[in-house]
Length: 305
Image 1 (cartoon, helix red, strand yellow):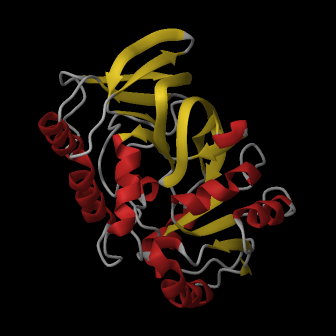
Image 2 (cartoon, rainbow, N blue to C red; image 1 turned 90 degrees about the horizontal axis):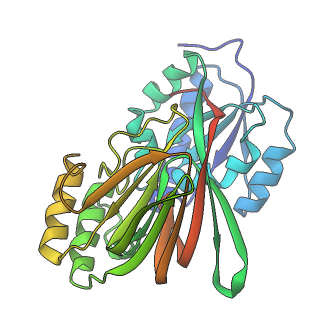
């Protein structure tokens, strides 16, 4: 398939994504882009901040192609939200959960590039704000979702797994390594300004996509085009119950089970009784005691959804 009239893509390559997978696969992807006659310019930057600034300097509606994981996409989202710059995703990260939800597989360049012939689809984006250590306010846009508590601790534990393992195996290993240190904290959650859940909890996730951890379907009813976010929280739960819950999450059978709370809305505020681990689109974000998330409907044009 050729794309003789295609506009020039700006390719944002995260060479570190997937523990170096993106860098190793880039020559193969580059050759495929050239074979198809897809014009592109490679954007090489040292930091996410530089990547955002360079993308913001591009003309409106200039198409962007990210090569990496969800962190790569998240890094440049501020330069895409509400601008009209369309996005194509080439997944080569560790989990690739948002791309996996779309049916895109790491390394399957043919399918990802074939889909550039599709009509662009507007998808929702989440905006999260929290206070980091020292009181500095942090704000991030994300396509997939975030987790607090147990799943964020699992995300940290995954760093100790072999690089050759797939994301799902790494998450499962991290879950077993973390569950023995299970600690419940009190959480208070407001959804669209109304109290929703308050009490002991092992984890709380706010999702735009359906899955994290390389395939754990924490929010199976999420729809990235419905203008809503999904929140999932556990109630009081023990170690064995949590392991059972993880198996149910893998099969997307946990919603409606005792001790699992799930709902949709447009804005959610979460407050913990003590600092709790946080991950944002799979990236460790330290510990927080409070955060808020809101949805921006139809905020990004996705080219190969």
